[in-house]
Length: 87
Image 1 (spheres, rainbow, N blue to C red):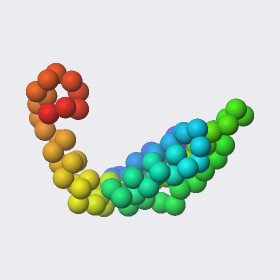
Image 2: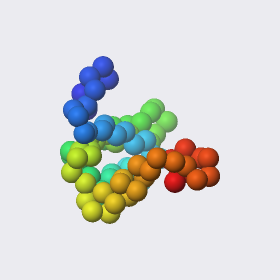
Image 3: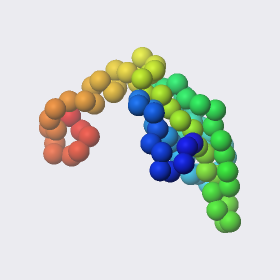
Image 4: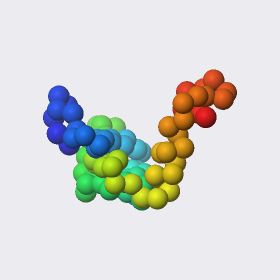
């Protein structure tokens, strides 16, 4: 990841996962990689008390087919039940 003051390149998102164990963080990263092209993950201790912080950059311009269809359907113009993010 770049410095916090530098935004990611157009179409990319920097993702940070904090989990109780490295395995849980890796499973989340695996799901993201099935949907988007991603950089190699980097992991760090989350805190002195334990846990894992995993960082990776995903390229939202290169999506897998299931992610593409979900992304396109989520870009609706209205919300039927008044909750943000729901069509």
